[in-house]
Figure 1 (cartoon, rainbow, N blue to C red):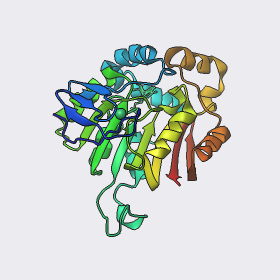
Figure 2: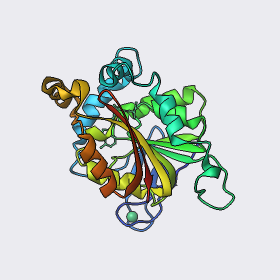
Figure 3: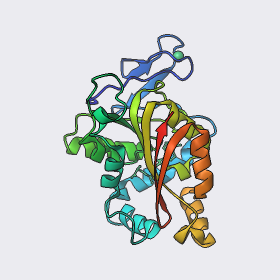
Figure 4: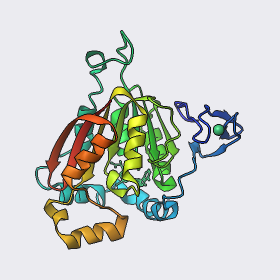
Length: 272
Ligand SMILES: C[S@@+](CC[C@H](N)C(=O)[O-])C[C@H]1O[C@@H](n2cnc3c(N)ncnc32)[C@H](O)[C@@H]1O
Ligand SMILES: [Zn+2]
């Protein structure tokens, strides 16, 4: 049983979904979303090659958090000046304790923020953020990554997290439902980045914050052979910093902050 029960909305008609007999049902249009091992599996848009992501990231899931994958890749991409622990950096950029001082959702609201972790993978960031947030929903397209995420979170006894299979460019989540959105090491993988950014903006409350990391075509990724390997292995397309800035603005974000370390770009932005 998921420790928290997020409110999901139907993307076909906008009604709230309700849980019944092992699925989430839309009482209005009849859409039924299966729940497999406590993870709802929402449909993904046709433009997303679900099988490609599932195949690669499903296979990667068992080793993703072991010393052979994330850490060496992070060092290679981020270089010597990248923060030692990107999780703590993201948690502090999310400003999870400062809700009372910064545009509270409602007057007198001092509760820790709710966080949506988009493309959460095995939940590396989700679990770190859960320590300081009210609740965290992790969504990802890969069932294999999500199964790990669920298992690792349970092992740590985290009761304020839940996971769901969704694509970043079609979130089955209500407008303004979250105080914070994290999206780490993933935007460069999305086939429709602008649709995904529009979704991240839509599900944030006004004044809410987007925090994340992505990769840019500088440092090691300035070299075309390295970019070719990134494209062929995971379908990664590094951004040009200036055009990434423009795309965030076009999606409606403001107060943009960037910190580039090697080819790793840490970013923070405000919705509205
Ligand atoms: C490099 S991992 C990052 C995982 C996690 N955010 C972290 O920092 O460790 C990239 C993740 O993006 C997910 N992903 C790729 N395309 C996606 C999409 N369209 N919607 C949601 N997740 C997606 C992959 O399944 C994978 O788990
Ligand atoms: Zn519906």
